[in-house]
Length: 276
Image (cartoon, one colour):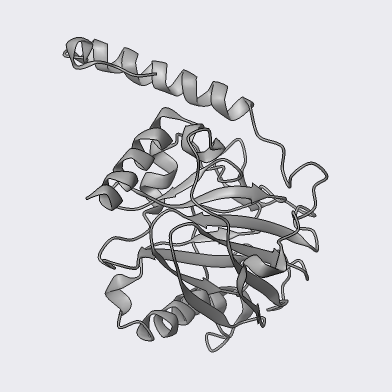
């Protein structure tokens, strides 16, 4: 809903009521979850002449690329890898980057999937989730690091997402200070009644995919390492594919643009940058 400046909250109770209104609207919106994976649950076929690049990322390794506004990155989890961590930056100004906290807070949901957006720390939309067969993505815990590998596998030398991101961003002139908390796709992390994190068994399937459309010119880095909560006691990682294709910019009736009032504002902020 839209609130005009004439009736903005002014008292603590009015702010509380406004908060509750937004919360109710967010819960109603979440209940109208889009159908995952198109009409049949399979990845929509990408015409060959629209594909810009396609690469297989081996287990344990990383990949980075620059996407132009209107291109889409499809991540295909052929081998049911237990997590593909991702980070995003505004390629034209890398001081603007993915903000995990705002992505969850502003959309009133940690359930990132089809129809949701990934927000920057400047209130702009970096990426939109335009298709998704899984709906099992972790926007809260982040990726692995040497310490988590030591605790789980007893070996801090195993490849991990933190070190992979350091290597990936170095190729683009960035360093450790440029690496914020990440999102991990194909990581079915859930909370129980006591607020403890756990892994939803059998929720990751071979062939799961997610489509991420660039709403800015975006620098993206992927790390194909097991999530810290992955159930296997052994370090295991399967190859995944990254496909970049020309999908076009969103129209006025686009699902991601109109899913929530918060997304509308994020797209308005994004579009203003390009109008300028």
